[in-house]
Image 1: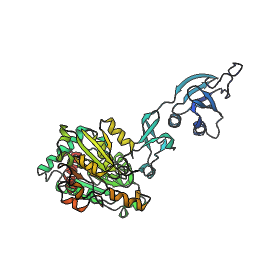
Image 2: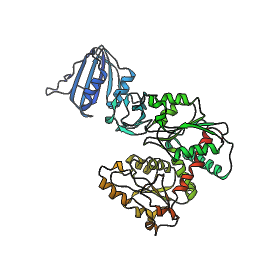
Image 3: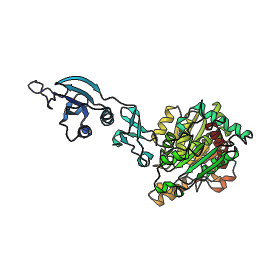
Image 4: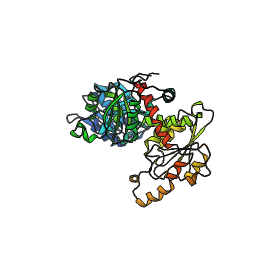
Length: 157
Length: 308
């Protein structure tokens, strides 16, 4: 597992408790960890969080583990918007049965509000549609008002 | 190329070939009489925000082609005031009219209307976002003055001056000019410069963009000087506004040494940025530009209604 740093005694120690079944979201940029946990967890979920773990790719990263549940498509879209670098592992009986990068949609539909306060979607009962215009950094453009935004400017629906 | 039933929402939705087709149709309409082309067709003008030129010229365009017009020009007199959504207004009006021309204060309202409406929606201005019929008439005006815009025999120099940050007409026009052989000069007060996303797009399209310090520099080098209005509400300091206003004002005296071909355009209304004495110079072309709104809007109506 990527959240197992090498200790002084060169023994790999798991920093965040293993789960029997569920989903592990790894490689979350440090600052987004709690936001990701907040995004995917419901009040009844058993969630384990690792913050500021060492990562070769990100420097500091976060890990969120959620027991007994796999993520639906909408949650994956929301995850793609706030943590596009994250990876998702599906765990069954302590084994990683599937691991994938968060799939990046070409369009975020009703995932976040348009950040333009004068955009019609913020005044009519109408779903927002934000098209992906660049990946690194992730930028989107509102289909309606045509303004471009960095994802940090957006508020999830 | 398919125009019948199509919405006209944003200039970015149109290819070079489609833009040229619209200009060509406008030219044909201006040259000949097409009195009964839209007989029996009805246009609804939904102006949730006031407008003089856009509404009147769309109405004139429709009437001159034999069509008829219904509509409103004050949202206060409609069910919107009672809380009716834009979506519901469109769902109703699409049963009344063959084409909808709409101006709305919210950015993106025209795109939303287009997603609902079964009849073509022409955007007459959505907040600070788009105003495509203005851009088509600007291009038509430039192409009539300078056929090189279309045939590309000479690179035209086009200067934009004034509020380039918030002025939607210059954003749309720059987007459209990316299809043509031009170079761009910009003159804007600090803080009201052209936003990076448009400059980036222009440079990607191979257009050289140069920021010049003074209007006089733009006058000396340009084929077209496109002026825009400075809006006082953009300036926190009234004194600063007065100072800047004075430096973004063209007078006849400033045009004494201008190249003979220079033409000054303005989407209107002009306030102080073009002195009245400029009107009498051969460089003034803004009223003729407004007049070009008729054939261009006739072309748009005829094309989206499938009559051309």
